[in-house]
Image 1 (cartoon, helix red, strand yellow):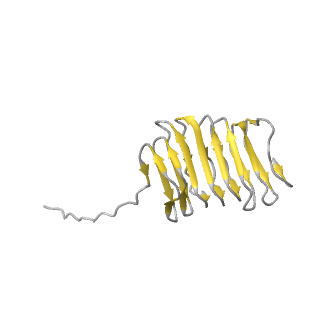
Image 2 (cartoon, one colour):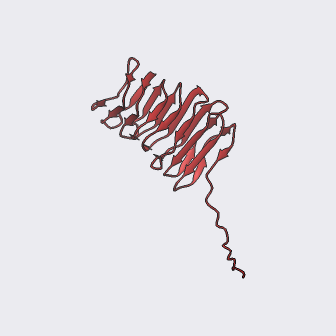
Image 3 (spheres, rainbow, N blue to C red):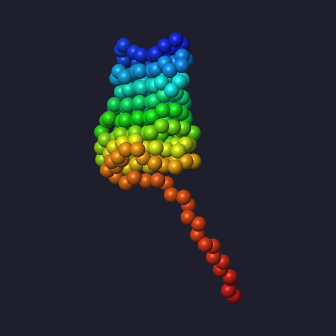
Length: 187
């Protein structure tokens, strides 16, 4: 679905069995799809301009497809896990929420470029969140039901809000260099 002149909104629930693509081509036009949508396949969102915000609520396990958002991105999955099958590029802030008990967030594509502060929210004793970002990463206030894993591939990893993590926060370690040892054979 492409809207070439204005904002893209909805007046009822969208049910799509395959992939979904939502685009606003006018600068600063927004995408607002906040009903209990039933998008089964990958959902892609594209906006342009610093005020070209996008928000999506889905009532199925959500797979985000290749997306490029000029403003802020707000993504809520109300019943399942939130994953991706392609890179996400967001110029503004990003918010990812799974509101179902024990649903996870897995956004680990190496091409992710989330420039603004990133908020993550999960609920439940096994509700992990994993994020990989290919630009300097700032974590906004976030609440994670169990473990949080964040990989910043190229920049600094900072926070702008309180991180509440019930399990263990993790940042992948760099491999340690161990001294090499030579053992001479004995006869």
